[in-house]
Image (tube, rainbow, N blue to C red; front, side, top):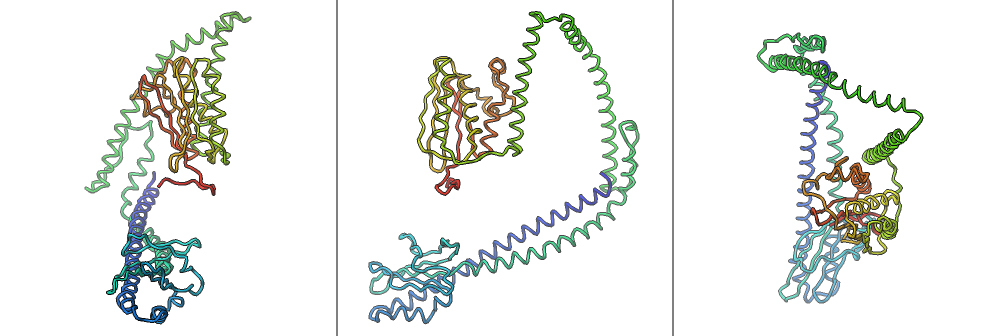
Length: 476
C-alpha cells in the first residue's frame, strides 16, 4: 500500500467516523423530537378530554339533548380542524361523535373503542387507508354518578410533517459536512504523513530476494518512528520465515520422491498388462467407483456453493407440503423395507407453503435416506408434519444409532462425518446435511437436530406459515 492509498484510507476512516457520529446525532435528535412531539400532542389531546369532562359533562344533567353537541362544535370545530371527538356514557352508548372531517381522511363513527379496562391513556390507530391517528382516552365520573368516556384524536400526519422536514434537513446538510470533513482531513493527512514517503519508497524495493535490507529509521520519537522500527522487525521475521519455507520445500521434495516413484511403477504395470485381465479390470473398476464418488462430491459441492451464493433460481410456487411429504415418504418405503424398517407418517392435511418442489423433495429424501442408513434392521422411522402457531413443523425421527454429543454442533458442516468409516462404506461424503441446510436457508426455513447416542435422532424443519393472501406470517 503506497502513501497515497494510506492517506485515502485514513481520510475515509475519519470521514466514516464523522458520518457515524452524525448519524448517531441525527437519530438521537429524530427520536428525541419524535418523543417530544408525541408527548406534546398527547398533552394537548389529554387537555381537551379533561376540559370536556370537567367543564361540559358536569353541566350535562338538565341540559337539552343537543346542548353537548353545540358546545363541542363551537369550542373545537372538529370537522374543520380534522379532529376526532367521541363521548360515551356507560349504559347509554355514544352520546356524541364528531362528523367526518374535511378531506375525508377518516370516518369517526368507524373508530375502534379502547379496551374496557383502560381508564386513561393514548393509542396510535392505523386505519385501512393507511391513515394513522393518535388518540387519548379519559374516563370521568360526574357528581350524579354517571360514568363517561371521552376520546380525542387527531391525524398523526402533523407530527410526520415535522419529522419529514428534519430528515430533509439532515439529508441536505450531512453530505456538505462530510465533503468539508473529507477535504480538510485529506489535507491534514497529507501533511502528517509526508515523512512516510521515504519509508514507502524504500519498502517498494524490498522483495523476497533482498530481505536482508532494512528501512531507514526516522528519529522523530512519534508513531512514525515506532512504525519504521516495527516494519524492520517484521522484515526480519519475514526473512527468517522465508528461510524456513525454503528448507521445508527441499525436505518435502525429497520425501515425496519415493511415493511418486511407486505410483509411477504401478501405472506402468497396468499399461504393460494390456490386454485387460482380471486384475486390470479390478483396478479400472475401483478407479471408476472413485470417479463416480468424486463426481457426486463435486456435484454436491457445486449445489451447496450455488445455493449459498444465491445463484440457484428457485421456482417458489404455492405447493401442498402435506401431499409432497406423503408422496416422498411413500417412495422411500422401498428402501426402508430392504432393511425391515417401519416407515410411518403423521401428516396434517392441507398444509401449504411457497417453495421449490424439487429442492424441498431433495431435503426430505436426504433426511429420510440418512435415517434409513443409520437405523438398524427392524428399526422405525416416523415422519410428522403439523402447524404450530405461525410455524409449520416437519420432523424426521428415528430410533437408530444416534449422534454423539460432540458431533451435534458439526453435523451440517461440509465433509463432517461422526463415523467416518461407516459413512464412507455407505457411500456418504458428509455433504447431504449441508445440502439440506442450504436449501432450507434458501426457503427461509430453520433446520435443527436433536439426538442421543444409542437412542436415535430427530431432524426438525420449521417453515413460516403462509396466510391466505400469500404473505408469510411472522411469529408474535
